[in-house]
Length: 246
Length: 280
Image 1 (tube, rainbow over the protein chains, first blue to last red):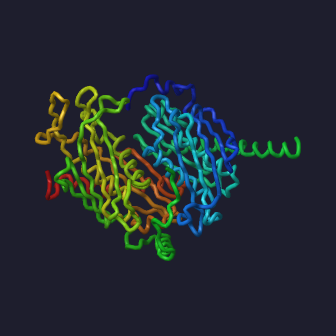
Image 2: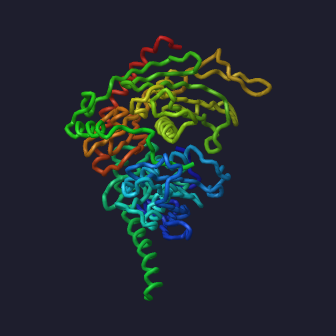
Image 3: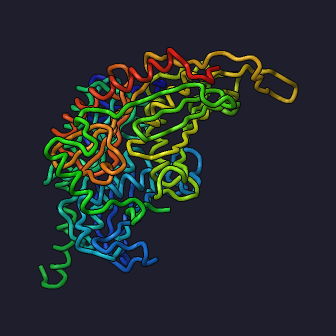
């Protein structure tokens, strides 16, 4: 492990003042892209992800459509200015291609694609600001955008990350923790169905640390889920107010 | 570049899929294996004489060749005193009727990145001994060629990469006026620690039944797939590549994966003790 410029955790307090099991401030706005069928902006601290959903709509080219279910197209992309140091080349990197794939596979179990035969549903995710846990924030934003688009879903998929910092299992890695930690565990979780749909890990973990981090991620996802529900409901309440008056 | 739900590319007939699923529900496999049983695994090192290190792995009918090539390059800015590891995977058009010619697709990229993460984080390679001089380090390329895909590419490719690295030689550096050049006439051992060799084990799920080492057809019939990579007693990489899992299922899958690890590790150990015919 490389030495971080500041101690990442001291006396149970992390560099940004959080407790090990504490998320950064979570901000959620549903319906931020007016042209899209559904959209959401999610920020975990300084990490900002914008997701827009178009569809269900016709699949082009047609031969790529499926007769028994819809097709999902997911793109995770980082804006060139989203990184702290050098400009990120806007061409899709191998990392972005892999993340697009795992996010698609994390969302598909939640979406009732069998309701949308021959159609496609597009999910576009852009990272505007990256400060760790970008794929987790992306997943929350994407599933909220899908729900906002009125796509049939079994549950929301909430993304959170856990990590191993100086031997302590922590929730929601920041950028600097991500860079210097001993392990990183991004998770996608459906809180009502209690299913993990995204699960990745790197670093060096014992079995106990891994299982503890999974439990912590579940608690984090349950917390974010409540915020996500409020945001989704809030949008419809505000429409109701506009239509019927308060 | 976006990820699209696979269409027609990899598919299996409905009847065959249901047959496989019904068998697994009764704890049987189409090829007669137990749920926790791997196919025969064969590892041979030193199979490519032009590479700096190489290995081939056969896991049942799955066949992967790994070659190591060493070059000289710049270190990453955040690790100026460490060598660079690059893992690349190509699923050749030979590998199955569903594979097309072209640059690596998302499956191949994911395969390479999962193998890379397993090797990178466990201290298998002593990357500090790949330092040459200020601003110059060894670059170790591991290229994986999938020649035949009968499922479980991750476990086979990981084993091939690890064995190829263990068999690899590091060419000496000759300093010249114009810079540095590799002298393949003088070689040293690749700085790897065989005791830390990472081993990837994939676990599949049909219904609530878990099993190891899926064939190509089984992979197309599963409700979930997750790969664990172990080094010594540590978990160094995990990747869910299909479906969904509960917490309890992940815990059981982890225990099942540990059973599979020992078989793969002993195949690796015996290959490293008796190099293949083209040994270096």
